[in-house]
Image (cartoon, rainbow, N blue to C red):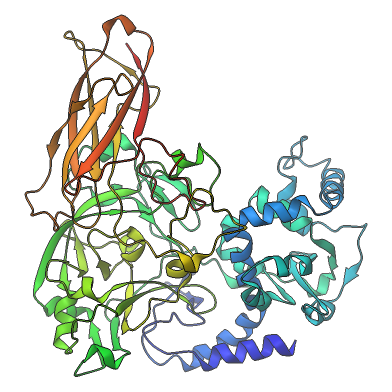
Amino acid sequence: MSFLIKATYSLRNSYKPGLRCLSTGQYNHTLLSNNNQQHKQQYRYASGNAKGAKNQTAVYTLFTLGGITLGYLFFDNLENLKKVAAQANKNNVKTATTQIKEQNSNKNDVSDDGDDAYKKWHSTERKDLPTFKLEDVQKHNTLEKGIWVTYGIGVYDITDFIPKHPGSDKIMLGAGSAIDPFWAIYQQHNNKEILSLLETYRIGNISPEDEVSTDDMGSPWAMEPKRHPLLKPASERPFNAEPPLTILAENFYTPNEFFYVRNHLPVPVIDVKTYELEVEIETDKAGAKSTQKALSFEDIKALPKHSVTAAIMCGGNRRSEMTEVKSVKGLSWGAGAVGNAKWSGARLRDVLLAMGVQPNENLHVILEGADLDPTSNPYGASIPLSKALDERGDVILAYEMNDKPLNRDHGFPIRVIVPGTVGARNVKWLTRIVVADHESNSHWQQNDYKGFSPSTDWDTVDFTKSPAIQAMPVTSAICTPLPGEKVKVSADGFVEVRGYAWSGGGRRIVRVDLTADKGKSWHVATLEQENEPDGRHYGWSLWTARIPVDTKLKGEEVEIWSKAVDSAYNVQPETFANIWNLRGVLSNAYHRVKILLN
């Protein structure tokens, strides 16, 4: 117990009021009355003194701190966990399933085959196991005493797993506590694989009076924005979705409502009237004249306005194709996790130069958003200072998207746009900028969005050995026709194909090649693109091609391949087998679509 108390007060003492925080540990659960009508919950963005929030956060942190890192453990290291689970006692899971079936035999919400049983394991009493008090669980917070956690009414001993994981120091934060509050936010943990794994570690039941409930937390998703129904979710909470490919290639500038959405946490509610962006120069190596500055939304809008056309692409775009080679960890994105827009706002370069920041190839710009997890950690990323200061880099503090104000899903009121760079560095709901002599320490910069050898697995991976993705590799995708579509062959024996192509780092697409006979003959597409100089060609290219097909193959299946070539003559690799990586990022092999000739 003393361990958790120390951790809680450590967090409170390091709490920085203002720009980085949403009150009450980022989510202030405030009930607002509207003429004594229905109450609504709102998460307010707080930019003033957060002293009161410290005390409110302390108790919440005490109960959630233990669960947070454990949640990352299970979700981010699934391959390791599968191997550990295979060595565990599988009889526990079988017993749980049997008991749940028996207890729910007269209920309609559990199917006869038990497919939904796993959802109730943690909330079902295991009569074959003992019952523990919460104080018993709290005593088990060291390797010597054992590491216990709770979920629902289940008690789980994960001691044997701790030595097998390189991040054991962080896992120890979860010792002797409940994971329920954390998983109420990160609902991607509630799937069969993870819950099945967790049940193999179950050792008992928590006494009813000590069960941790999340009912009084309110839903952190209550104020999520409305989305267009055509967006296809890869996950609901947090919301991640892509548009249908047939729509994607219809517009050079992707309509805002059809632009893919990538969120890592609940969407914050920000009052633009109280919004502030904190800029801090952390290192003397930057040579700055001033080290701190706070900019309101109106301050940013008063700076010279600059516009840039830039495609934003998720690092996991087309991951679902890589999964066909071998399973990977991550959202199953199709080829639609990309969009192209005209972004407008103030140059980051102008802000930094006004503070006297000098060029330095060894420095970094850390970018943090208002979307925070229950431990006050914001979504964060970083880019090289050289990119931020480069006049041709076109990094902007955007407040407009396609000549319209940013909507909430895309970063209202301010999002940093880092043209030519992976989407993960284009931080939304930007609240803090730091010039430092090190990269961001955030999970998303250090332990995610990195590529590895196809032979690297979760037993051998070392995230410190691979650089964070910045510029993305060349890629292309066929948007029409769709896989399995019956395509009419023209009278002269052609089929029409449309798609997009893009390369990171400002490299222009110079050619898109297509084949319908597995590479025996190639046909060059017609490009639609901006006339920007190479090195500053940040927008995507749309393309169209008419491909001849063998009319004798009518009624049969034909596979169309696309590959793009950029200005450095980088070309897409032929298959995913040789670029497979355990995170499923940088998925840029030939795009292949099988169609039926009609």
